[in-house]
Amino acid sequence: MINLKKPLSLALAAMLLVGCGTSTDAGTPAEGTDAGTTDAAAPADAGTEAAATGAPAEVVVAFDADLSTMDHHIATDGNSFIMQSMCYSGLMSLTANGQPTEELAESVDVSDDGLVYTFHIAPDAKWSNGTDVTANDFVYGWQRLADPDLASEYAFILETIHVVNSSEVVAGEKPVEELGVKAVDDKTFEVTLSLPCDFLLGLMAFPSFFPLNKEFFESQGDQFALGVDNMIYCGPYNMTDWKQGESYTFTKNPDYFKYDPDAAETVVFKFQQDTQTAVLDYQAGNINVVKLQGEQVDMYKDDPGFTNRLQGYLWYIPVNLTVDKLQNLNLRKALHYAIDRETIAANVLKDGSIAAEGEIPVELATGPDGKDFRETAGKITEYDPAKAEEFYKAAVEELGGDVTLDLLYEDSEASSAVAVNLQQQLQTNCPGLTITLNQKPKKTRLELMKTQQYELGLTRWGPDYADPQTYMDLFLSTNVSNNQGRYNSAAYDELVLKATQGEDATDSAKRWADLVEAERIMVAEDFAVIPIYQNGGAMLISTDIKNINFHSAGVDDYRHIYAN
Image 1 (spheres, rainbow, N blue to C red):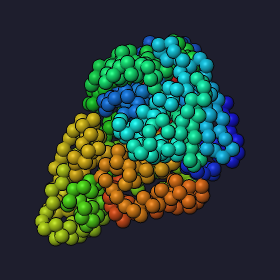
Image 2 (cartoon, rainbow, N blue to C red):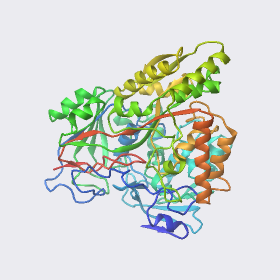
Image 3 (cartoon, one colour):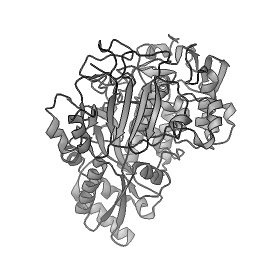
């Protein structure tokens, strides 16, 4: 039971994920954004009636990117988060339509001013070694997330929800013990905020906020989360097999206190980079869920298992502004105008992806004006080959000659196809420009971008919650973990911080206007980030598979998957 006291209850009682400091309907998931459960059956929340025939022995899901890590304080990618969510649980989980509901917490109290959240942990919640999940496990986990010695790329998310002293702890100015969290008793976890944050409950389902068992963690030393025997679980599945670069097996936890008898006994996530091979395995009945790429979408669109959805993932190029030649504004303008995003979405990807109109995706969040953020902000990307050539010529004159740029991308089929097309477009529309292609495994690509060892890098961000702040925070000059291009704009910082932490944080209309203007400055004035496309989700899902909860914001949920 969520015990919400006004005024915060007015927003959350309607189960809306909204902006920090607001109590309006900003951030309501727009119609059509959440695919909900797989459409072979009516949408069902976790734990509802499933197949009468009982749980299948095994469900196999193909992923085209490998697992990066099972350490939920280090992970930054969607596939890792999905697998972590199989065997760990948070205080809350998300329903089929993306709304927060109790998981390890059996109830939540929120103070009148919205600054203190008190989570009452279920008495039956236990770790896989039989010990209780306690409030101290959450205190320890959150403190580790904030610890500057770990330097988690997701430490910023504590600041996003305004946990007291989070900024100072993450910066190393205060000890982790001063983070605004405490164990009132073994089963009562208290979080204190400096500003209200209405989307906090939804984020409690996000892996970064999962608990950590201190005794087990410290017993593992530097081996924690490197194998199935180096982890301790508190979710509906245990990880029982780990074949790096091949497959990852999760077996139902019979002792989970919210045991779902209808869920699949075993779920295997199979890494298959070659999607054509994965599709052939699907047709042979060896795989139940597979993504489609390019020409495959047209080939299989009439298959009974075909489904498509628009995802919240936004692919973009954060220009590395530590590189001297990329500090040239005319060069960045040329790159922006040289890219035909419509062609990339419609003719290269062909998977339901759409051209990016800005850095905030469409259908992510609704503002106080009742409109989608993208509708309010308008389209701020533009394809204009004449402008691209004009700006490139100006850049060549200023830089003293033609330019060569390296484009870093990961080794998935989609990224490879997009990178090749980008090379062709940029070189065609900026005569004299040379783009060299630099393909790396995803994990390597992430590390190179994190350490600014790149010039142009094709990357993506998936929204952690249904609000534009999940993107805008990335490019603050203080966000050294995620601001890969080292964008540094006083005007941008001022607007975003005013909207999320300052004088406009509790005024929905002003907050929204600040974020709209900040995005315009970054994308269409400074040209520091080049939005490319928003992910489609063309897939083949066996017709007997039910209860995959797809979320436009947050982590897709396979924890209650089953088959007829």
